Image 1 (cartoon, rainbow, N blue to C red):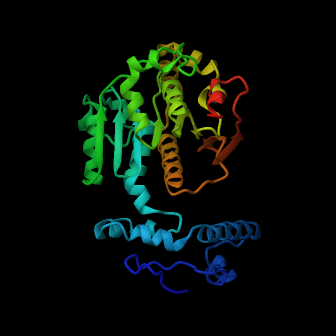
Image 2: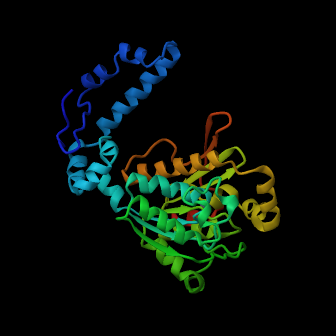
Image 3: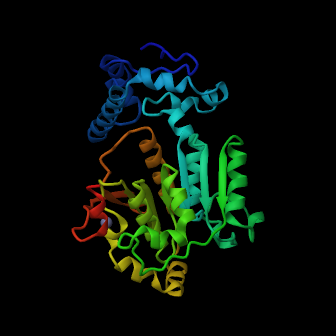
Length: 339
Ligand SMILES: [Zn+2]
């Protein structure tokens, strides 16, 4: 093995299959307590997949990009810059919008800001409650009663004072019956022009609003503006996740149809059911963390086999279930595929 060309990072990366083989000798793997042959086999497969990453990426381009960072940034993100999938400059320059800075939103934000994303727009209208604090990790007890987007901004700036954070304390009230994919733009733009502009001018949209038709509004606007969005909710012990990619994957309407809207129709019953069934902190944190890593992968241009799948993460049984979903024949989103 030899040192990486980028001496600032001081990284040692395998440059050939031979290098990697040295790293993953039978002896090394055994040292890592994999005495059982099945475990050894699986671990070897993972090591080889990691090697493929190195082959996938044009290392020279990565290094050139990373040298466009300033010295502080290189030092701060040194440990991840060393990974060939990471393009720190792209991460720094990405523009992320978070609709809903609650359980999912705060944890996605934590993952992204620690990864080096600098540009955020936060949208929410809630105030912080004491009962939020088991899972909404940007807030502390002294924040109770304060406006979420303001406190989220303060905390994020403590983590990275160089971040650019724009906040909107607005309530997205979206009539559940409305499907803006079915009406012409002039009609809907009057009411939601501001939200439309935000989506249009940014790159990655986190759809973490948990109210009535609002996730569908974001769904529809992302389809119209051809922007990817990332959606997730927590149901008791599992996190449900889905990413939308324009003209490629199913949308929320393809998956849930009207059932989702009906479920969200009665606010009180949803609220009571959440209180009754619980919203377990670690499940929310893990779900947010998976979404955050998904966004980082997309920013860096790494497409994995989860694309087009609905993902269920069951933390109580250590299971991740991937279910392929395809665009629904009758969904309005399909008419945007050809344009
Ligand atoms: Zn659809």
